[in-house]
Length: 387
Image 1 (cartoon, rainbow, N blue to C red):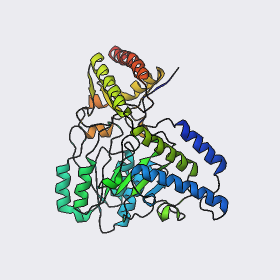
Image 2 (cartoon, rainbow, N blue to C red):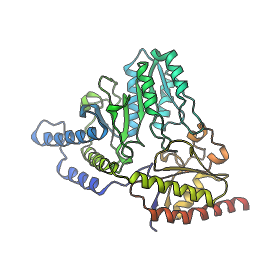
Image 3 (cartoon, rainbow, N blue to C red):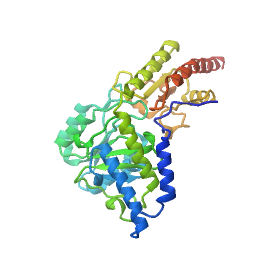
Image 4 (cartoon, helix red, strand yellow):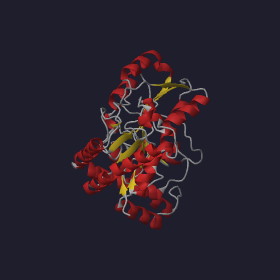
């Protein structure tokens, strides 16, 4: 059975050029880049060149990039590293719709005595900037970090990052954004934005898994969380993942080329057509966050009175890959905490499925999916009524 892959927010297929570059790095550039001999320094040059490519992709200097094992570690470093570096500040501000890498890290910090303030959201999951402004005006000198994701991994909702960052900059508060679902899918130039820390991950834009990074504005200091050697300018210990870094740089180059085209508009129209057909052909359906500004590739669709895990399983048996919320939370029978925080009714939240496209998604795949999905929902509802 051919697979219709509509789970690109979980991961994307590595580009052929990425696989080739990584294979070459594994075969030829295997010495340790920290070694002082000629072979090690040849590998160091590959890492440095890759860092330059990625920095150019993000609009910053190469020394502002810290390589990590992915978005989760980058988020951890930004949050816990910022708290540790600012002992005089003991407040973390974030939202309930963040990825687990931020939300759960906040909970861990709370256990250590950090005060967590959860910002209110509107019905689309967008942060209340007026509430943030009021909070900053009263308690700015207590806040170590504000952490708000750029694009939501479940709904695709885009946060007003420029406004949030400007408010933080005005009040002298450090601002971090989890941009894992943004970088590589939308143009990014951190030098033009009031962002102090930004997390990204290669496998979300057709690069390899196990490699990502953290952009750090000049002058921003964090205490490293990975204790070991002095790699990454003593900000993250551990031997660099050279094949992953090389692969990520190729993925960044390809993404930059793709972003210069009009393909995003075509894919957004394809996503919209997909949603419209689902609504037209299936009863008791809602598009979560339909009224908000969303990423071009994400559709979070709720099927009332059904369980998301059951839908995902039957879709998979019919060749469609989708997910019930975040991939790292799959297998849970509880509705998504992100959707509940937005106020989505439980009878819809339980049956919410995330369909996410990539730049490789075709019209033919969407047409075939639209032939399958209504029948899957009808059978599931039929079996439910028969119980």
